[in-house]
Image (tube, rainbow, N blue to C red; front, side, top):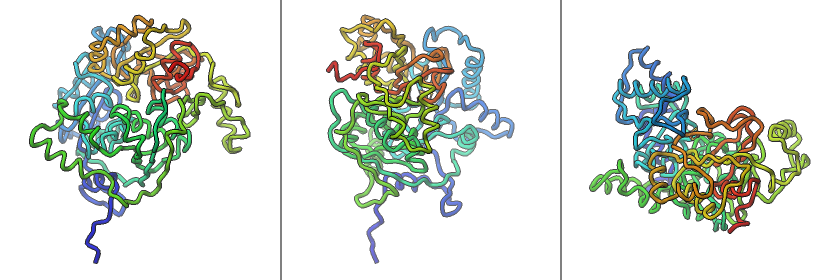
Amino acid sequence: MNSNPKPKTIIDKIWDKHVVQAIDHETSVFYIDRHFIHEVTSPQAFTGLKNRGVKVARPHKTVATADHNIPTQDQHLTIHDELSRLQVNMLTKNCADNGIELYGLNHPYNGIVHVIGPELGITQPGMTIVCGDSHTSTHGAFGTIAFGIGTSEVEMVLASQCLILSKPKTMRINVNGKLGKGLKSKDIILYIISRISASGATGYFVEFAGSAIRDLSMEARMTICNMSIEMGARGGLIAPDQTTYDYMEGREMVPKGEEWDKAMAYWKSLPTDPGALFHRELHFDAADIEPMITYGTNPGMGLGISRTIPSLEEIEPRSHASFLKSLQYMGYAPGEAMLGKPVDYVFLGSCTNGRIEDLRAFAGFIKGRKKAENITAWIVPGSKQVESQAKKEGLDVILREAGFELRQPGCSACLAMNEDKIPEGKYAVSTSNRNFEGRQGPGARTMLASPLTAAAVAVTGRITDPREFL
Ligand code: SF4
């Protein structure tokens, strides 16, 4: 008999540890360690609980913030938009009624839910984390199983701290080699999605691995995991390592002293065992990647910035109609070059690229340069703490001197639920995660890119390769 345990992937290890009860071969009752809530997807869940007379099972496992539809200017004033004001007020009341910690508007810890979790140390390796927001996958950068849920599931987690789930298939995406100058982790993930398509990882939970991933900072890793769902994956994660522990040590809600040592023993057991099998494995070379830009209306429609939009012959016949519809929405034609195309708006922010490293990269690039006259730019920190840090480092001054303004934190133009809407027909280079029709405002045309590419566009007013300046 072989006494060696079967090698396991990090996904299997975390998954198996959180199964409370198997229902059948595939489905189980699954324990959730942390639940993040915000003002948009939680009100109906609380109403559902109230109507059923059910109490929140473990209030201390849930953390709330207001982020989706808060203004990014004059946050000390009353919110103008009535629905937004109502939702934020509802969140405040629901949290107070149920004993849930709320980092509401103007709280020093307020910010986008996927920015504040990691920066406060609430997100820790080996956890299961959910939130009523698709980009909960961001927390996977710490080696967690983190994914977005719907409103009825928010209610289920509040009521029981559990979900009924089927185990996803596993995929490992390896990116090896060195990333070139002028490239960011946003380029890595846009490249992967462009190669495997916006549905290429449907049904899988993905581990990102390889030397190019290991070389990334935690903030850059969050960008990768954030966008893992844009290729259809249930979520994405990266095994914790010294970079993870260095980022976490000393953060507000990270275990301290003996508890830290105990936690470390668990965290260090998480990485995938040698020989563990994934259902699918892919390999990419970082040297093949150039700054990326999207040209269509899903994140898979991206290309290296120096390349041209595919011609019709390069597209599978069954996709011609959707390809042409997408280009028509964007006002582009097959075979056109992206470089030099005019742009109206630049948005730096969101849970993909609204962290301090993103602001540093943008400010470092525009320092000593001037904003192009045709560009309206929204520079939106991901949290209050990011905003304070940016000011401490004088990034607000650099931005101001170049003609930009640092706004207040929130989701902002990522999904345009507040006043930050791109007008119809206008072109926006955005560091967020979705370029769907109308995502940044009705009729808005979005091109996804890295903070460095966004900075290059902001100073030239057109699609520009940031490497031209480096
Ligand atoms: S920034 Fe965008 S993707 Fe991120 S939590 Fe807000 S709305 Fe969702």
